Image 1 (tube, rainbow, N blue to C red):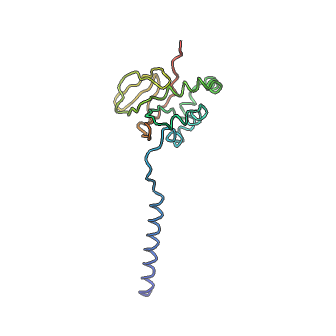
Image 2: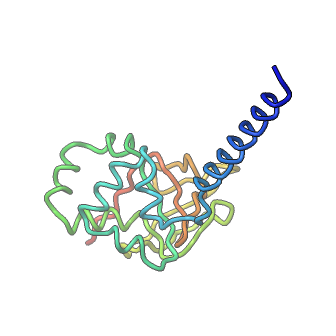
Image 3: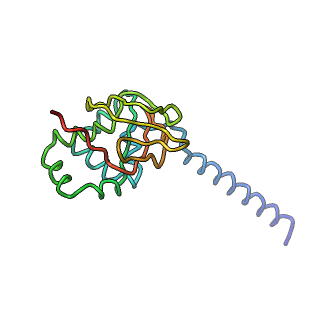
Length: 169
């Protein structure tokens, strides 16, 4: 191999590396967090929640200014809800909105800030939240399985159980 071939190969290699670095840096994202609605939509384990949020017409609200805290039930959490209940919610948009907004606070609450208390939900009803060690619980049966997913307009905490609001008397 001649010096000329070695030089050409080195120049070609350097040009390829420079091109690759340029392309890769162009792919990097510098955008900040997205809205809680977009955060939910981006998580495949929350696809059922995303679907019912859309059908209830709450997507634009959750893309709004906020701040919001969303206790986001997983797909498995929705599967655990009795079929009869899900069917009834599917037929009653007002009741569906009531259940969904029972999972939303009109403030940003990080897991570290949770104390045993009743908090007012966007639904208007109180929801009990508490913390034991590193575990945050929501309502009667929900446990936060993934905390502090920061969004541009709040925070999402993934939970393992759908919370049903108290029946209004």
